Length: 334
Image 1: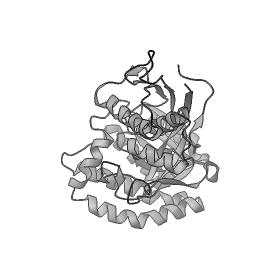
Image 2: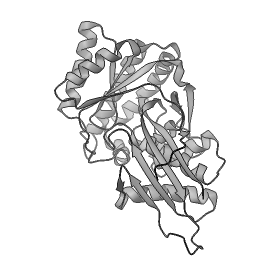
Image 3: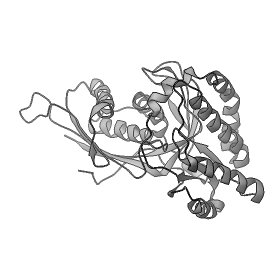
Image 4: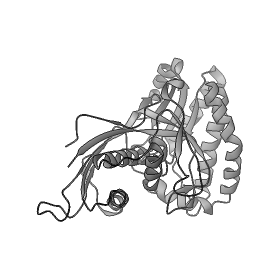
Protein backbone atom coordinates (compact mmCIF):
# COMPACT_ATOMS: atom_id res chain seq x y z
CA UNK A 1 0.00 0.00 0.00
CA UNK A 2 1.12 3.58 -0.61
CA UNK A 3 2.58 5.60 2.23
CA UNK A 4 2.26 9.39 1.94
CA UNK A 5 3.60 12.23 4.05
CA UNK A 6 2.11 15.73 3.85
CA UNK A 7 2.99 18.98 5.58
CA UNK A 8 0.18 21.52 6.00
CA UNK A 9 0.36 24.96 7.55
CA UNK A 10 -1.86 26.24 10.29
CA UNK A 11 -3.66 29.50 9.56
CA UNK A 12 -4.50 32.67 11.41
CA UNK A 13 -7.98 34.02 10.76
CA UNK A 14 -8.37 37.75 10.16
CA UNK A 15 -12.14 37.34 10.08
CA UNK A 16 -13.03 34.46 12.39
CA UNK A 17 -15.00 31.27 12.03
CA UNK A 18 -17.07 30.96 15.17
CA UNK A 19 -20.47 29.32 15.45
CA UNK A 20 -22.22 26.87 13.15
CA UNK A 21 -25.62 26.70 11.49
CA UNK A 22 -25.23 22.96 10.88
CA UNK A 23 -22.85 21.19 13.24
CA UNK A 24 -23.12 17.97 11.26
CA UNK A 25 -21.16 19.45 8.35
CA UNK A 26 -19.49 22.39 10.13
CA UNK A 27 -21.50 24.90 8.09
CA UNK A 28 -20.40 28.30 9.44
CA UNK A 29 -22.54 31.33 10.11
CA UNK A 30 -20.26 33.68 8.15
CA UNK A 31 -17.51 33.74 5.58
CA UNK A 32 -14.00 33.95 7.03
CA UNK A 33 -10.56 35.10 5.83
CA UNK A 34 -7.17 33.82 6.91
CA UNK A 35 -3.46 33.63 6.17
CA UNK A 36 -1.87 30.20 5.90
CA UNK A 37 1.34 29.98 7.93
CA UNK A 38 4.66 28.70 6.62
CA UNK A 39 6.33 28.15 9.97
CA UNK A 40 3.54 26.68 12.12
CA UNK A 41 2.64 23.35 10.60
CA UNK A 42 1.62 19.72 11.00
CA UNK A 43 3.45 16.85 9.30
CA UNK A 44 1.40 13.68 8.83
CA UNK A 45 2.25 10.27 7.42
CA UNK A 46 -0.59 7.93 6.43
CA UNK A 47 -0.24 4.32 5.37
CA UNK A 48 -3.28 2.24 4.51
CA UNK A 49 -3.04 -1.34 5.69
CA UNK A 50 -4.19 -4.47 3.80
CA UNK A 51 -7.95 -4.91 3.57
CA UNK A 52 -9.82 -6.77 6.30
CA UNK A 53 -10.13 -9.81 4.05
CA UNK A 54 -6.39 -10.35 4.26
CA UNK A 55 -4.81 -12.60 6.88
CA UNK A 56 -2.32 -9.81 7.60
CA UNK A 57 -4.95 -7.13 8.09
CA UNK A 58 -5.51 -5.02 11.18
CA UNK A 59 -8.97 -4.37 12.58
CA UNK A 60 -8.49 -0.79 13.70
CA UNK A 61 -6.83 2.48 12.82
CA UNK A 62 -3.77 3.50 14.82
CA UNK A 63 -3.26 7.23 15.30
CA UNK A 64 -0.29 8.81 17.04
CA UNK A 65 0.09 12.58 17.48
CA UNK A 66 3.22 14.13 18.95
CA UNK A 67 4.33 10.76 20.26
CA UNK A 68 1.05 9.88 21.99
CA UNK A 69 -1.42 7.32 20.68
CA UNK A 70 -4.88 8.82 20.64
CA UNK A 71 -7.79 7.14 22.38
CA UNK A 72 -11.24 8.19 23.56
CA UNK A 73 -13.14 10.98 21.81
CA UNK A 74 -10.00 12.59 20.38
CA UNK A 75 -9.13 9.36 18.60
CA UNK A 76 -12.73 8.71 17.60
CA UNK A 77 -12.93 12.11 15.90
CA UNK A 78 -10.03 11.21 13.62
CA UNK A 79 -11.40 7.73 12.95
CA UNK A 80 -14.69 9.30 11.86
CA UNK A 81 -12.73 11.39 9.38
CA UNK A 82 -10.90 8.34 8.06
CA UNK A 83 -14.33 6.70 7.70
CA UNK A 84 -15.40 9.54 5.39
CA UNK A 85 -12.35 8.96 3.22
CA UNK A 86 -12.92 5.19 3.23
CA UNK A 87 -16.49 5.80 2.05
CA UNK A 88 -15.27 7.89 -0.90
CA UNK A 89 -12.66 5.30 -1.84
CA UNK A 90 -14.99 2.34 -1.33
CA UNK A 91 -12.54 0.52 0.92
CA UNK A 92 -12.49 -1.02 4.37
CA UNK A 93 -8.73 -0.67 4.80
CA UNK A 94 -7.45 0.58 8.13
CA UNK A 95 -4.84 3.30 8.42
CA UNK A 96 -1.69 3.90 10.40
CA UNK A 97 -1.37 7.64 11.05
CA UNK A 98 1.56 9.41 12.67
CA UNK A 99 1.44 13.18 13.03
CA UNK A 100 3.75 15.82 14.48
CA UNK A 101 3.14 19.51 15.21
CA UNK A 102 5.95 22.04 15.46
CA UNK A 103 3.89 24.18 17.86
CA UNK A 104 1.75 23.56 20.98
CA UNK A 105 -1.39 21.60 20.16
CA UNK A 106 -4.91 22.73 21.18
CA UNK A 107 -3.73 26.08 22.55
CA UNK A 108 -5.22 28.56 20.10
CA UNK A 109 -2.79 28.19 17.18
CA UNK A 110 -5.22 26.23 14.98
CA UNK A 111 -3.63 22.80 15.27
CA UNK A 112 -6.90 21.22 14.12
CA UNK A 113 -6.71 23.27 10.91
CA UNK A 114 -3.25 22.08 9.93
CA UNK A 115 -3.90 18.62 11.39
CA UNK A 116 -7.07 17.83 9.46
CA UNK A 117 -5.74 19.45 6.28
CA UNK A 118 -2.60 17.29 6.43
CA UNK A 119 -4.60 14.16 7.32
CA UNK A 120 -7.13 14.72 4.53
CA UNK A 121 -4.56 15.32 1.80
CA UNK A 122 -2.23 12.52 2.96
CA UNK A 123 -5.00 9.93 3.35
CA UNK A 124 -6.53 10.76 -0.03
CA UNK A 125 -3.22 10.72 -1.87
CA UNK A 126 -2.22 7.44 -0.23
CA UNK A 127 -5.40 5.93 -1.71
CA UNK A 128 -4.76 7.61 -5.09
CA UNK A 129 -8.04 9.53 -4.84
CA UNK A 130 -8.16 12.24 -7.50
CA UNK A 131 -9.93 15.06 -5.67
CA UNK A 132 -9.83 18.74 -6.61
CA UNK A 133 -8.66 21.38 -4.16
CA UNK A 134 -12.28 22.42 -3.60
CA UNK A 135 -13.29 18.83 -2.88
CA UNK A 136 -10.38 18.46 -0.45
CA UNK A 137 -11.40 21.73 1.22
CA UNK A 138 -14.97 20.50 1.71
CA UNK A 139 -13.76 17.16 3.02
CA UNK A 140 -11.25 18.72 5.44
CA UNK A 141 -14.03 21.02 6.70
CA UNK A 142 -15.96 18.00 7.97
CA UNK A 143 -13.06 17.21 10.31
CA UNK A 144 -12.40 20.81 11.38
CA UNK A 145 -14.00 23.87 9.86
CA UNK A 146 -10.82 25.94 9.70
CA UNK A 147 -9.00 23.06 7.98
CA UNK A 148 -10.94 24.00 4.84
CA UNK A 149 -8.71 27.10 4.65
CA UNK A 150 -5.40 25.28 5.29
CA UNK A 151 -5.92 23.27 2.09
CA UNK A 152 -4.83 26.47 0.31
CA UNK A 153 -1.72 28.60 0.68
CA UNK A 154 -1.37 32.34 1.06
CA UNK A 155 -4.42 34.49 1.80
CA UNK A 156 -7.61 32.48 1.82
CA UNK A 157 -11.36 33.04 2.03
CA UNK A 158 -13.79 30.36 3.18
CA UNK A 159 -17.20 30.99 1.63
CA UNK A 160 -20.00 30.03 4.00
CA UNK A 161 -22.06 28.42 1.26
CA UNK A 162 -25.30 26.60 1.96
CA UNK A 163 -24.41 22.90 1.81
CA UNK A 164 -21.47 20.51 1.83
CA UNK A 165 -20.40 21.17 -1.76
CA UNK A 166 -20.63 24.97 -1.62
CA UNK A 167 -19.03 25.60 1.78
CA UNK A 168 -15.42 25.65 0.59
CA UNK A 169 -12.37 27.87 0.69
CA UNK A 170 -10.38 29.44 -2.14
CA UNK A 171 -7.15 31.38 -2.39
CA UNK A 172 -7.43 35.14 -2.66
CA UNK A 173 -3.70 35.77 -3.17
CA UNK A 174 -0.59 33.56 -3.12
CA UNK A 175 1.93 33.71 -0.25
CA UNK A 176 4.28 36.04 -2.11
CA UNK A 177 1.55 38.68 -2.51
CA UNK A 178 2.35 40.30 0.85
CA UNK A 179 5.28 39.80 3.23
CA UNK A 180 3.06 39.86 6.29
CA UNK A 181 4.20 38.18 9.49
CA UNK A 182 2.41 36.49 12.36
CA UNK A 183 4.31 36.59 15.66
CA UNK A 184 2.57 34.19 18.04
CA UNK A 185 3.19 35.25 21.63
CA UNK A 186 2.88 31.97 23.52
CA UNK A 187 1.59 32.57 27.03
CA UNK A 188 0.43 29.00 27.62
CA UNK A 189 1.29 25.66 26.02
CA UNK A 190 -1.43 23.75 27.88
CA UNK A 191 -4.42 22.24 26.12
CA UNK A 192 -7.62 24.23 26.53
CA UNK A 193 -10.39 22.60 28.56
CA UNK A 194 -13.10 23.25 25.96
CA UNK A 195 -12.20 22.53 22.34
CA UNK A 196 -13.12 24.82 19.47
CA UNK A 197 -15.50 22.10 18.27
CA UNK A 198 -17.40 22.37 21.55
CA UNK A 199 -17.23 26.16 21.54
CA UNK A 200 -18.88 26.46 18.13
CA UNK A 201 -21.98 24.76 19.51
CA UNK A 202 -22.17 27.24 22.39
CA UNK A 203 -21.90 30.40 20.25
CA UNK A 204 -25.63 30.60 19.51
CA UNK A 205 -26.38 30.88 23.24
CA UNK A 206 -24.66 34.28 23.48
CA UNK A 207 -26.89 37.36 23.15
CA UNK A 208 -24.00 39.00 21.27
CA UNK A 209 -23.66 36.36 18.57
CA UNK A 210 -26.17 37.71 16.06
CA UNK A 211 -24.71 41.20 16.31
CA UNK A 212 -21.23 39.88 15.54
CA UNK A 213 -22.51 37.80 12.62
CA UNK A 214 -24.25 40.86 11.15
CA UNK A 215 -21.22 43.12 11.58
CA UNK A 216 -18.88 40.62 9.93
CA UNK A 217 -20.69 41.35 6.66
CA UNK A 218 -19.40 44.94 6.80
CA UNK A 219 -15.88 43.85 7.74
CA UNK A 220 -15.36 41.31 4.97
CA UNK A 221 -14.97 43.80 2.08
CA UNK A 222 -12.68 45.98 4.22
CA UNK A 223 -10.37 43.06 4.95
CA UNK A 224 -10.47 41.91 1.32
CA UNK A 225 -9.51 45.43 0.23
CA UNK A 226 -6.74 45.71 2.82
CA UNK A 227 -5.15 42.48 1.63
CA UNK A 228 -5.48 43.53 -2.02
CA UNK A 229 -3.76 46.85 -1.26
CA UNK A 230 -1.28 45.35 1.23
CA UNK A 231 -2.43 47.98 3.73
CA UNK A 232 -1.79 46.90 7.33
CA UNK A 233 -3.36 50.00 8.87
CA UNK A 234 -6.56 49.28 6.95
CA UNK A 235 -6.47 45.63 8.04
CA UNK A 236 -5.68 46.28 11.70
CA UNK A 237 -8.89 47.66 13.16
CA UNK A 238 -11.17 44.94 11.71
CA UNK A 239 -8.58 42.36 12.78
CA UNK A 240 -8.70 43.43 16.43
CA UNK A 241 -12.44 44.12 16.43
CA UNK A 242 -13.43 40.69 15.24
CA UNK A 243 -11.06 38.93 17.63
CA UNK A 244 -12.53 40.85 20.57
CA UNK A 245 -16.09 40.32 19.30
CA UNK A 246 -15.54 36.57 18.97
CA UNK A 247 -14.18 36.35 22.51
CA UNK A 248 -17.09 38.46 23.76
CA UNK A 249 -19.42 35.85 22.25
CA UNK A 250 -17.43 33.11 23.98
CA UNK A 251 -17.50 34.89 27.31
CA UNK A 252 -21.25 35.54 27.21
CA UNK A 253 -22.36 32.10 26.05
CA UNK A 254 -23.77 29.31 28.21
CA UNK A 255 -21.54 27.97 29.57
CA UNK A 256 -19.17 30.91 29.45
CA UNK A 257 -15.77 30.30 27.83
CA UNK A 258 -12.89 32.37 29.18
CA UNK A 259 -9.75 31.44 27.29
CA UNK A 260 -7.77 34.54 28.25
CA UNK A 261 -4.98 34.39 30.80
CA UNK A 262 -2.96 37.22 32.39
CA UNK A 263 -0.41 36.97 29.60
CA UNK A 264 -3.15 37.42 26.97
CA UNK A 265 -4.06 40.82 28.37
CA UNK A 266 -0.39 41.72 28.86
CA UNK A 267 0.33 41.22 25.17
CA UNK A 268 -2.80 43.04 23.96
CA UNK A 269 -2.02 46.09 26.11
CA UNK A 270 1.63 46.07 25.03
CA UNK A 271 0.80 45.95 21.31
CA UNK A 272 -1.62 48.87 21.62
CA UNK A 273 0.84 50.86 23.71
CA UNK A 274 3.69 50.35 21.24
CA UNK A 275 1.41 51.33 18.36
CA UNK A 276 -0.18 54.39 19.97
CA UNK A 277 2.85 55.76 21.78
CA UNK A 278 5.72 54.73 19.50
CA UNK A 279 4.13 54.28 16.09
CA UNK A 280 5.05 50.59 15.75
CA UNK A 281 2.45 49.34 13.29
CA UNK A 282 1.22 46.00 14.54
CA UNK A 283 -2.14 44.56 15.54
CA UNK A 284 -3.27 41.62 17.62
CA UNK A 285 -5.72 38.85 17.03
CA UNK A 286 -6.60 35.80 19.13
CA UNK A 287 -8.04 32.46 18.13
CA UNK A 288 -9.84 30.10 20.52
CA UNK A 289 -7.16 30.02 23.18
CA UNK A 290 -4.93 32.27 25.31
CA UNK A 291 -2.06 32.85 22.87
CA UNK A 292 -1.90 36.13 20.98
CA UNK A 293 -1.04 36.56 17.30
CA UNK A 294 0.68 39.86 16.51
CA UNK A 295 0.46 40.82 12.84
CA UNK A 296 3.15 43.07 11.38
CA UNK A 297 5.29 43.65 8.32
CA UNK A 298 8.87 42.50 7.77
CA UNK A 299 10.54 45.72 8.92
CA UNK A 300 9.17 45.37 12.45
CA UNK A 301 9.63 41.62 13.01
CA UNK A 302 12.95 41.73 14.88
CA UNK A 303 11.91 44.59 17.17
CA UNK A 304 8.55 43.05 18.01
CA UNK A 305 9.99 39.59 18.54
CA UNK A 306 12.49 41.04 21.01
CA UNK A 307 9.86 43.07 22.84
CA UNK A 308 7.34 40.26 23.03
CA UNK A 309 9.99 37.84 24.30
CA UNK A 310 10.84 40.25 27.11
CA UNK A 311 7.28 40.37 28.48
CA UNK A 312 7.00 38.50 31.81
CA UNK A 313 4.20 36.14 30.82
CA UNK A 314 5.47 35.28 27.32
CA UNK A 315 7.09 31.82 27.17
CA UNK A 316 8.21 32.11 23.57
CA UNK A 317 7.47 33.69 20.20
CA UNK A 318 6.73 31.71 17.04
CA UNK A 319 7.43 33.76 13.90
CA UNK A 320 5.78 32.85 10.61
CA UNK A 321 5.44 34.15 7.08
CA UNK A 322 2.60 33.34 4.68
CA UNK A 323 2.86 29.70 3.68
CA UNK A 324 2.05 27.33 0.83
CA UNK A 325 -0.70 24.81 0.28
CA UNK A 326 -0.09 21.30 1.70
CA UNK A 327 2.85 19.58 0.04
CA UNK A 328 4.49 16.16 -0.03
CA UNK A 329 7.68 15.25 1.82
CA UNK A 330 10.00 12.44 0.71
CA UNK A 331 10.80 11.31 4.25
CA UNK A 332 8.12 9.60 6.32
CA UNK A 333 7.49 9.69 10.08
CA UNK A 334 7.54 5.87 10.29
